[in-house]
Image 1 (cartoon, rainbow over the protein chains, first blue to last red):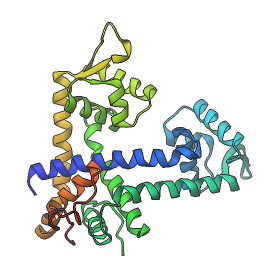
Image 2: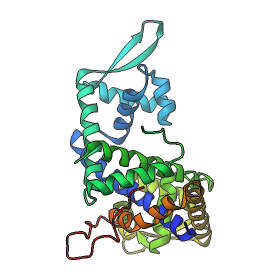
Image 3: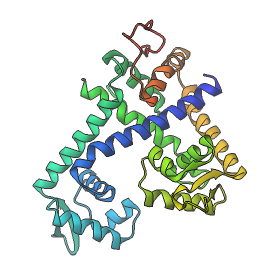
Length: 145
Length: 157
């Protein structure tokens, strides 16, 4: 592959990502969450055990005071619940409520639909071939059987 | 539509883009700052309103990014004394140099990944560039619109 091709591919990947993020933002807008609330919900969803506020602050790269604002809003909306950690009474852990779980599913669906919109111009065969090709490029990717 | 393939595509594009972000970190910029610098660089003087639209950033976030790039000496603000909202920005020579280094670094990251591939698959990637270009530009595939099929199709790996 020539240098120009590598440069073009790098540029295309960045532009595709930007389109994808914009499409996701549009699809996520009806959920009525701020970007910070979305990130917080996603992190709570992904973490292996319910995270502590300090872990959330670290992960999001914001000061604990700002996390408090975000979590207060999510708690008021009924999506997140603060619970005392039974193993350490001084620690508060963040749990998703049933409504929070439903919103999480909505977020997943929004991201999936944004991706479907983006890749819709390609035929199924082309999408499959492209996923495979780009997967080869991603050396840190987990091996897909 | 095959959701599973679409989800894999989404994931791999985001992962590759994240690996490319290393190039901006090398210049001491966040990925968002590097992206804004790239647009300012590519478009010449550009209004903040257009920039917000292109980057999909809200005005508050954008003005923070622009302020940073300005303080690094990579872009400068061109104020229209008659109309505050018409504020535009352009890149400085240092900004152009920095962005060139970021682009070269990104290309190097891709080259390094491609170097590990057999020639056949590297060729298939080159052949897929027009299809990717169409996706990135938001164009529909040309297939089925009287154009000969093939040149923007993705060859199997």
